[in-house]
Length: 405
Image (cartoon, rainbow, N blue to C red; front, side, top):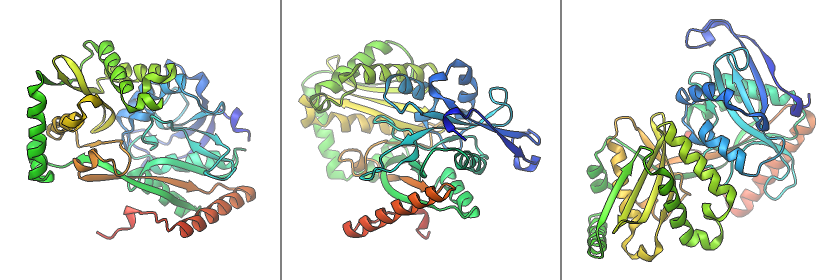
Protein backbone atom coordinates (compact mmCIF):
# COMPACT_ATOMS: atom_id res chain seq x y z
CA UNK A 1 0.00 0.00 0.00
CA UNK A 2 1.39 3.40 -1.01
CA UNK A 3 1.34 5.56 2.12
CA UNK A 4 1.44 8.76 0.11
CA UNK A 5 -1.95 7.80 -1.26
CA UNK A 6 -3.29 6.34 1.95
CA UNK A 7 -6.23 8.26 3.34
CA UNK A 8 -7.89 5.97 5.81
CA UNK A 9 -7.94 2.42 7.08
CA UNK A 10 -10.89 0.76 8.71
CA UNK A 11 -10.23 -0.64 12.17
CA UNK A 12 -11.62 -3.79 13.75
CA UNK A 13 -14.74 -3.90 15.89
CA UNK A 14 -13.83 -3.23 19.50
CA UNK A 15 -16.11 -4.26 22.34
CA UNK A 16 -17.55 -1.67 24.67
CA UNK A 17 -15.31 -2.69 27.55
CA UNK A 18 -12.29 -1.57 25.51
CA UNK A 19 -13.79 1.77 24.65
CA UNK A 20 -14.16 4.83 26.86
CA UNK A 21 -16.49 7.73 27.45
CA UNK A 22 -19.76 5.93 26.79
CA UNK A 23 -19.20 5.06 23.14
CA UNK A 24 -20.19 1.52 22.17
CA UNK A 25 -18.65 -1.02 19.79
CA UNK A 26 -17.09 1.49 17.37
CA UNK A 27 -15.06 0.88 14.26
CA UNK A 28 -11.85 2.79 14.77
CA UNK A 29 -10.52 4.38 11.62
CA UNK A 30 -7.14 5.79 10.82
CA UNK A 31 -5.92 8.14 8.16
CA UNK A 32 -2.70 9.73 7.02
CA UNK A 33 -3.72 13.31 6.35
CA UNK A 34 -1.51 15.34 4.01
CA UNK A 35 -0.30 18.42 5.89
CA UNK A 36 -0.81 20.52 2.77
CA UNK A 37 -4.54 19.78 3.05
CA UNK A 38 -4.94 20.87 6.67
CA UNK A 39 -7.71 23.38 7.21
CA UNK A 40 -9.85 24.73 10.02
CA UNK A 41 -12.29 21.80 9.84
CA UNK A 42 -9.98 19.70 12.02
CA UNK A 43 -9.41 22.33 14.71
CA UNK A 44 -12.44 21.52 16.87
CA UNK A 45 -11.67 17.81 17.23
CA UNK A 46 -7.96 18.60 17.56
CA UNK A 47 -8.58 21.04 20.41
CA UNK A 48 -10.80 18.56 22.24
CA UNK A 49 -8.11 15.89 21.88
CA UNK A 50 -5.50 18.22 23.38
CA UNK A 51 -7.78 18.98 26.34
CA UNK A 52 -8.20 15.24 27.03
CA UNK A 53 -4.65 14.17 26.18
CA UNK A 54 -2.99 11.49 28.27
CA UNK A 55 0.23 13.54 28.17
CA UNK A 56 0.05 17.26 27.32
CA UNK A 57 2.24 18.34 24.43
CA UNK A 58 1.77 21.90 23.23
CA UNK A 59 4.16 21.31 20.31
CA UNK A 60 1.58 19.10 18.61
CA UNK A 61 -1.45 21.24 19.43
CA UNK A 62 -3.06 22.94 16.43
CA UNK A 63 -2.12 26.51 17.38
CA UNK A 64 1.58 25.57 17.52
CA UNK A 65 1.88 22.87 14.84
CA UNK A 66 -0.07 24.63 12.09
CA UNK A 67 2.13 27.78 11.97
CA UNK A 68 5.20 25.53 12.17
CA UNK A 69 4.01 23.52 9.16
CA UNK A 70 3.13 26.71 7.30
CA UNK A 71 6.48 28.43 7.85
CA UNK A 72 9.19 25.82 8.44
CA UNK A 73 10.81 23.34 6.07
CA UNK A 74 9.59 19.76 6.17
CA UNK A 75 9.51 16.65 3.98
CA UNK A 76 6.99 16.90 1.15
CA UNK A 77 5.50 13.54 2.21
CA UNK A 78 4.94 14.57 5.81
CA UNK A 79 1.55 13.37 7.08
CA UNK A 80 -0.61 13.67 10.15
CA UNK A 81 -1.48 10.22 11.44
CA UNK A 82 -4.98 10.48 12.90
CA UNK A 83 -6.87 7.89 14.94
CA UNK A 84 -10.64 8.37 14.97
CA UNK A 85 -13.32 6.71 17.10
CA UNK A 86 -15.37 6.19 13.93
CA UNK A 87 -15.80 8.02 10.67
CA UNK A 88 -13.03 10.60 10.14
CA UNK A 89 -14.16 14.19 10.76
CA UNK A 90 -17.46 12.91 12.21
CA UNK A 91 -16.29 11.20 15.41
CA UNK A 92 -13.97 11.83 18.32
CA UNK A 93 -10.30 12.27 17.47
CA UNK A 94 -8.35 9.82 19.65
CA UNK A 95 -4.76 10.35 18.55
CA UNK A 96 -2.51 12.51 16.39
CA UNK A 97 1.13 12.41 15.34
CA UNK A 98 2.98 14.18 12.49
CA UNK A 99 5.40 11.81 10.80
CA UNK A 100 7.14 11.16 7.53
CA UNK A 101 10.08 9.48 5.79
CA UNK A 102 13.72 10.34 6.47
CA UNK A 103 16.75 9.21 4.47
CA UNK A 104 19.60 9.67 6.94
CA UNK A 105 19.89 8.17 10.41
CA UNK A 106 22.85 9.73 12.15
CA UNK A 107 25.94 8.82 10.17
CA UNK A 108 24.16 6.23 8.02
CA UNK A 109 22.19 6.73 4.82
CA UNK A 110 19.25 4.65 5.98
CA UNK A 111 15.59 5.27 5.22
CA UNK A 112 13.07 5.15 8.05
CA UNK A 113 9.91 6.85 9.38
CA UNK A 114 10.03 9.46 12.15
CA UNK A 115 7.74 11.87 13.98
CA UNK A 116 8.35 15.43 12.83
CA UNK A 117 10.27 17.78 15.08
CA UNK A 118 12.08 21.02 14.27
CA UNK A 119 14.58 23.24 16.04
CA UNK A 120 11.87 24.93 18.10
CA UNK A 121 9.96 21.75 18.95
CA UNK A 122 11.08 20.31 22.29
CA UNK A 123 8.76 17.34 22.80
CA UNK A 124 7.65 14.61 20.39
CA UNK A 125 5.14 12.68 22.53
CA UNK A 126 1.99 11.95 20.46
CA UNK A 127 -1.30 13.56 21.38
CA UNK A 128 -3.49 10.66 22.51
CA UNK A 129 -6.78 10.72 24.37
CA UNK A 130 -6.48 9.31 27.89
CA UNK A 131 -7.30 5.59 27.93
CA UNK A 132 -6.42 4.96 24.26
CA UNK A 133 -2.64 4.79 24.48
CA UNK A 134 -2.38 1.11 23.51
CA UNK A 135 -4.99 1.42 20.77
CA UNK A 136 -3.05 4.33 19.27
CA UNK A 137 0.17 2.33 18.95
CA UNK A 138 -1.61 -0.77 17.68
CA UNK A 139 -3.29 1.18 14.90
CA UNK A 140 -0.23 3.24 13.99
CA UNK A 141 2.06 0.21 13.77
CA UNK A 142 -0.50 -1.77 11.77
CA UNK A 143 -0.88 1.13 9.34
CA UNK A 144 2.89 1.42 8.89
CA UNK A 145 3.29 -2.37 8.54
CA UNK A 146 0.96 -2.33 5.54
CA UNK A 147 2.45 0.80 3.95
CA UNK A 148 5.41 1.03 1.61
CA UNK A 149 7.35 3.47 3.73
CA UNK A 150 10.78 1.97 4.38
CA UNK A 151 12.85 0.92 7.34
CA UNK A 152 11.67 1.23 10.91
CA UNK A 153 9.73 3.70 13.06
CA UNK A 154 11.72 6.19 15.12
CA UNK A 155 9.94 8.21 17.80
CA UNK A 156 12.03 11.21 18.78
CA UNK A 157 11.67 13.25 21.96
CA UNK A 158 9.08 11.18 23.86
CA UNK A 159 8.70 11.29 27.63
CA UNK A 160 10.25 8.18 29.20
CA UNK A 161 8.10 6.35 31.71
CA UNK A 162 4.87 8.14 30.80
CA UNK A 163 1.63 6.46 29.71
CA UNK A 164 2.59 6.59 26.01
CA UNK A 165 5.98 4.99 26.64
CA UNK A 166 4.44 2.29 28.84
CA UNK A 167 1.76 1.50 26.26
CA UNK A 168 4.29 1.35 23.41
CA UNK A 169 6.52 -1.12 25.22
CA UNK A 170 3.54 -3.26 26.23
CA UNK A 171 2.08 -3.37 22.72
CA UNK A 172 5.44 -4.23 21.18
CA UNK A 173 6.13 -6.86 23.83
CA UNK A 174 2.74 -8.51 23.27
CA UNK A 175 3.32 -8.59 19.49
CA UNK A 176 6.95 -9.79 19.74
CA UNK A 177 8.02 -6.58 18.03
CA UNK A 178 11.38 -5.10 18.96
CA UNK A 179 11.17 -1.68 20.58
CA UNK A 180 14.32 -0.16 22.02
CA UNK A 181 15.24 3.02 23.83
CA UNK A 182 18.25 4.28 21.86
CA UNK A 183 18.94 7.62 23.55
CA UNK A 184 17.90 9.40 26.73
CA UNK A 185 18.50 12.72 28.42
CA UNK A 186 17.24 14.44 31.55
CA UNK A 187 16.13 18.05 31.62
CA UNK A 188 15.05 20.36 34.40
CA UNK A 189 11.48 20.07 35.63
CA UNK A 190 9.63 22.24 38.15
CA UNK A 191 7.14 20.41 40.37
CA UNK A 192 6.31 19.74 44.00
CA UNK A 193 3.94 20.72 46.77
CA UNK A 194 5.79 23.89 47.78
CA UNK A 195 5.28 27.60 47.87
CA UNK A 196 7.71 29.55 45.72
CA UNK A 197 9.58 30.71 48.82
CA UNK A 198 9.78 27.19 50.28
CA UNK A 199 11.12 25.80 47.03
CA UNK A 200 13.68 28.57 46.68
CA UNK A 201 14.97 28.25 50.23
CA UNK A 202 15.04 24.44 50.11
CA UNK A 203 16.87 24.06 46.81
CA UNK A 204 19.12 27.11 46.56
CA UNK A 205 22.05 27.40 48.94
CA UNK A 206 21.97 30.33 51.37
CA UNK A 207 25.19 31.75 49.97
CA UNK A 208 23.73 31.68 46.45
CA UNK A 209 20.51 33.34 47.64
CA UNK A 210 22.47 36.16 49.25
CA UNK A 211 24.47 36.65 46.05
CA UNK A 212 21.33 36.86 43.92
CA UNK A 213 19.72 39.31 46.33
CA UNK A 214 22.83 41.47 46.14
CA UNK A 215 22.68 41.43 42.32
CA UNK A 216 19.04 42.44 42.30
CA UNK A 217 19.76 45.34 44.67
CA UNK A 218 22.69 46.50 42.54
CA UNK A 219 20.58 46.27 39.40
CA UNK A 220 17.86 48.26 41.14
CA UNK A 221 20.35 50.99 41.88
CA UNK A 222 20.78 51.60 38.13
CA UNK A 223 17.09 52.32 37.54
CA UNK A 224 13.51 51.31 38.29
CA UNK A 225 12.93 47.54 38.23
CA UNK A 226 9.55 46.07 37.35
CA UNK A 227 8.61 42.38 37.16
CA UNK A 228 5.42 41.54 35.29
CA UNK A 229 3.42 38.42 34.40
CA UNK A 230 0.69 38.60 31.76
CA UNK A 231 -1.80 35.96 30.65
CA UNK A 232 -3.92 38.26 28.50
CA UNK A 233 -3.55 39.63 24.95
CA UNK A 234 -2.93 43.27 25.86
CA UNK A 235 -0.18 44.88 23.75
CA UNK A 236 0.75 41.43 22.49
CA UNK A 237 2.27 42.51 19.17
CA UNK A 238 4.53 45.10 20.79
CA UNK A 239 5.61 42.50 23.39
CA UNK A 240 6.48 40.07 20.58
CA UNK A 241 8.52 42.78 18.84
CA UNK A 242 10.42 43.45 22.06
CA UNK A 243 11.14 39.76 22.60
CA UNK A 244 12.39 39.25 19.05
CA UNK A 245 14.65 42.31 19.26
CA UNK A 246 16.02 41.29 22.66
CA UNK A 247 16.85 37.76 21.52
CA UNK A 248 18.46 38.93 18.30
CA UNK A 249 20.64 41.43 20.21
CA UNK A 250 22.48 38.59 21.96
CA UNK A 251 24.61 35.61 20.94
CA UNK A 252 21.76 33.93 19.07
CA UNK A 253 21.56 36.88 16.75
CA UNK A 254 25.31 36.79 16.19
CA UNK A 255 25.13 33.08 15.32
CA UNK A 256 22.06 33.52 13.15
CA UNK A 257 19.84 31.28 15.27
CA UNK A 258 17.57 33.93 16.79
CA UNK A 259 13.91 33.74 15.81
CA UNK A 260 14.12 37.16 14.18
CA UNK A 261 16.96 36.08 11.85
CA UNK A 262 14.61 34.59 9.23
CA UNK A 263 11.14 35.49 8.03
CA UNK A 264 10.02 31.88 8.52
CA UNK A 265 10.94 31.58 12.21
CA UNK A 266 9.74 35.11 12.95
CA UNK A 267 6.28 34.45 11.49
CA UNK A 268 6.11 31.01 13.07
CA UNK A 269 6.78 32.57 16.48
CA UNK A 270 4.15 35.26 15.96
CA UNK A 271 1.60 32.68 14.89
CA UNK A 272 2.27 30.39 17.84
CA UNK A 273 2.16 33.24 20.38
CA UNK A 274 -1.11 34.57 19.02
CA UNK A 275 -2.61 31.07 18.87
CA UNK A 276 -1.66 30.34 22.47
CA UNK A 277 -3.01 33.68 23.63
CA UNK A 278 -6.30 33.14 21.85
CA UNK A 279 -6.73 29.79 23.61
CA UNK A 280 -5.72 31.14 27.03
CA UNK A 281 -2.52 29.07 27.01
CA UNK A 282 0.07 31.86 27.00
CA UNK A 283 1.99 33.26 29.95
CA UNK A 284 4.64 35.94 29.36
CA UNK A 285 6.98 37.31 31.97
CA UNK A 286 9.17 40.38 31.75
CA UNK A 287 11.76 42.19 33.86
CA UNK A 288 12.03 45.84 32.86
CA UNK A 289 14.61 48.44 33.82
CA UNK A 290 13.33 51.98 33.40
CA UNK A 291 10.63 50.60 31.12
CA UNK A 292 12.97 48.67 28.82
CA UNK A 293 12.92 44.84 28.85
CA UNK A 294 16.17 43.25 29.99
CA UNK A 295 14.87 39.70 30.21
CA UNK A 296 11.68 38.02 28.94
CA UNK A 297 10.28 34.52 28.87
CA UNK A 298 7.42 32.61 27.30
CA UNK A 299 5.51 29.83 29.06
CA UNK A 300 2.89 27.76 27.27
CA UNK A 301 0.18 25.99 29.27
CA UNK A 302 -1.71 22.78 28.51
CA UNK A 303 -3.82 20.68 30.83
CA UNK A 304 -2.09 20.61 34.19
CA UNK A 305 1.34 21.18 32.69
CA UNK A 306 3.46 24.07 31.50
CA UNK A 307 6.33 24.43 29.04
CA UNK A 308 9.10 27.01 29.33
CA UNK A 309 9.40 27.72 25.62
CA UNK A 310 11.79 30.65 25.18
CA UNK A 311 13.91 33.04 27.24
CA UNK A 312 15.81 36.13 26.13
CA UNK A 313 17.97 38.56 28.08
CA UNK A 314 20.10 41.62 27.50
CA UNK A 315 23.74 40.54 27.72
CA UNK A 316 24.76 44.08 28.68
CA UNK A 317 23.33 43.26 32.12
CA UNK A 318 24.64 39.70 32.39
CA UNK A 319 26.67 40.51 35.52
CA UNK A 320 23.34 40.94 37.34
CA UNK A 321 21.99 37.54 36.18
CA UNK A 322 18.65 38.98 34.99
CA UNK A 323 17.53 35.64 33.55
CA UNK A 324 17.99 33.96 36.93
CA UNK A 325 16.13 36.78 38.68
CA UNK A 326 13.17 36.32 36.34
CA UNK A 327 13.20 32.56 36.85
CA UNK A 328 13.00 33.10 40.60
CA UNK A 329 9.82 35.09 39.99
CA UNK A 330 8.68 32.23 37.74
CA UNK A 331 8.72 29.88 40.75
CA UNK A 332 5.28 31.13 41.66
CA UNK A 333 4.03 28.59 39.08
CA UNK A 334 4.22 26.18 42.01
CA UNK A 335 1.40 28.06 43.71
CA UNK A 336 -1.00 27.81 40.77
CA UNK A 337 -3.74 25.28 41.57
CA UNK A 338 -4.14 24.55 37.87
CA UNK A 339 -0.49 23.52 37.35
CA UNK A 340 1.25 20.35 38.52
CA UNK A 341 4.56 20.79 36.68
CA UNK A 342 6.51 22.95 34.24
CA UNK A 343 8.91 21.41 31.70
CA UNK A 344 11.93 23.67 31.19
CA UNK A 345 12.38 22.46 27.58
CA UNK A 346 16.09 23.10 28.21
CA UNK A 347 18.97 20.90 27.18
CA UNK A 348 20.47 18.46 29.66
CA UNK A 349 22.97 20.13 31.95
CA UNK A 350 21.76 23.66 31.19
CA UNK A 351 24.07 25.97 33.18
CA UNK A 352 21.28 28.22 34.46
CA UNK A 353 18.02 26.33 34.92
CA UNK A 354 19.57 23.09 36.19
CA UNK A 355 20.79 24.94 39.26
CA UNK A 356 17.32 26.29 40.05
CA UNK A 357 14.96 23.43 39.21
CA UNK A 358 15.97 20.22 40.95
CA UNK A 359 13.55 17.69 39.45
CA UNK A 360 14.21 16.03 36.10
CA UNK A 361 12.11 14.90 33.17
CA UNK A 362 13.58 12.08 31.09
CA UNK A 363 13.16 12.35 27.33
CA UNK A 364 14.14 9.59 24.92
CA UNK A 365 14.30 8.32 21.37
CA UNK A 366 12.76 4.96 20.54
CA UNK A 367 13.31 2.71 17.53
CA UNK A 368 10.53 0.23 16.69
CA UNK A 369 10.70 -2.65 14.24
CA UNK A 370 8.20 -2.81 11.38
CA UNK A 371 7.10 -5.98 9.61
CA UNK A 372 8.88 -7.17 6.46
CA UNK A 373 12.15 -8.95 5.70
CA UNK A 374 13.98 -5.90 4.39
CA UNK A 375 12.67 -3.73 7.20
CA UNK A 376 13.76 -6.24 9.79
CA UNK A 377 17.23 -6.40 8.25
CA UNK A 378 17.53 -2.60 8.27
CA UNK A 379 16.41 -2.41 11.89
CA UNK A 380 18.84 -5.12 13.03
CA UNK A 381 21.71 -3.58 11.08
CA UNK A 382 21.15 -0.12 12.52
CA UNK A 383 20.79 -1.41 16.05
CA UNK A 384 23.95 -3.51 15.72
CA UNK A 385 25.86 -0.45 14.51
CA UNK A 386 24.52 1.71 17.33
CA UNK A 387 25.38 -0.89 19.95
CA UNK A 388 28.90 -1.26 18.56
CA UNK A 389 29.51 2.50 18.50
CA UNK A 390 28.11 2.75 22.01
CA UNK A 391 30.65 0.24 23.30
CA UNK A 392 33.53 1.93 21.50
CA UNK A 393 32.63 5.32 22.95
CA UNK A 394 31.59 4.02 26.35
CA UNK A 395 28.10 5.45 25.88
CA UNK A 396 25.34 4.36 28.23
CA UNK A 397 21.61 4.91 27.96
CA UNK A 398 19.85 5.58 31.23
CA UNK A 399 16.34 4.15 31.41
CA UNK A 400 14.57 5.40 34.55
CA UNK A 401 11.87 2.74 34.15
CA UNK A 402 14.45 0.08 34.99
CA UNK A 403 15.47 1.71 38.28
CA UNK A 404 14.11 -0.16 41.29
CA UNK A 405 12.12 2.03 43.69
